[in-house]
Image (cartoon, rainbow, N blue to C red; front, side, top):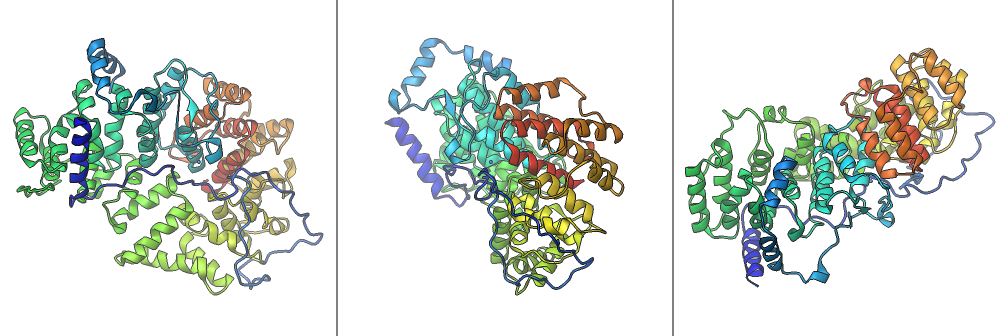
Length: 605
């Protein structure tokens, strides 16, 4: 009962604070997949005997100017040694005594045998998605993977795999298994998803590793109050200064300013944290009831951004200089995009990064722009994009909507990727008409960013006769991304594409078509050799992903696909990596994701 009263005290106090704190994590993450993702494809209608020949520039649409129904897509996303030593420091009696304080009865404890919010009925992978793989091996892969990864679609798939309620491998503690999944999600920019996993474990079952990741998670979600229920347990294991500072922060959030100030003064004398880190903690204390501290935060002498600095500053709505974001990866901007204490205009840079990484869906991005407009303080360039976006979705006619999309794409020959994501559903609703090949290619590319593959396939009748600028790109996108073969695919057609295309793009096209089995093995190998790479090149990684695919392990394949895409530049991804990734996904029944990754390669190269 005493524990309940303590928890209630800090909870009630935190609700009353001026400090804006996030709401309790949602029951399940937002799906980045459009309705119908994963459903069996329907048989495409036969192509007309006299295909429409597109004009070489924008022309009046032959179809009505009203939006057409969007076609449902065919598919529905601390050092270990020190940790162990800290755990061993407690005797069995001490551990039993700590567990005895837990409020829940034994039969109410959640199992560590299978943890995750996504089930097969909720777009998750099956419980055996990682097969009989060693948990230590999988955890090592997760720790060593440099994220964010190259492909937005591969990241969406990996997020889905990490959030799935999969069986805990036998050679790893369930809490540690959750910790490694959450830690990888954080590095992907998926802070809210990481919190969902952390909160799936009862606090009396936390390990030192999970305490360490929980600290990072609640800071990434700008929720210092989330640390308070874990503070007492974490302090038994960890010498981390952040946990020590919860002795100061948590009393302040519950309105106990006397204890908070005393602990803050003691932390200052002991030098637990210094400089900006101390000042941020002091400012948190100053937000509590009866606080008499006025703290000014200055960043002049700060040379890098840390999770502590990001988490406290963002929760306090203290602006972080842009140059400090340059000292961390783009995933931190994605954390910023979901920060509840910040205005939409403050979250604008993060929202566009989040869309690029796969953290934001088309729907989330459009919703963000709507909020930015409603707030009324959008910068001029963003206001222009919002106006264009409104026209793209609700313009009076198809010509108006297409022109607005061109504005968002910025460069029609190499469209802005965020602009493509923002216009995905608008592109899917546009009627097929006699457009130039470049416009048609960009519309198809936009649709594939959100998985509207059936809507994209409707444009195949233009691809049959298109020529000039964009014709090759339109064909290549449909060749790899459509749910079935809606365009001619063969060695001759690939060679024709290669005559005008960038050599790297040609290599990736061959790799994708071979991986999807849309080229036979002999033609694929021959074309690859002709264009300077070997489809049969092997490495430890390629043998591992091929073996996982052979065992039907969707989770292992998703993770190994990410391992094979550890670069920020599509131009540095080896073509044989794309081949093995697409082939493995295709083999285990993740063909839609394989096609979207292949289409992304055609879009971003």
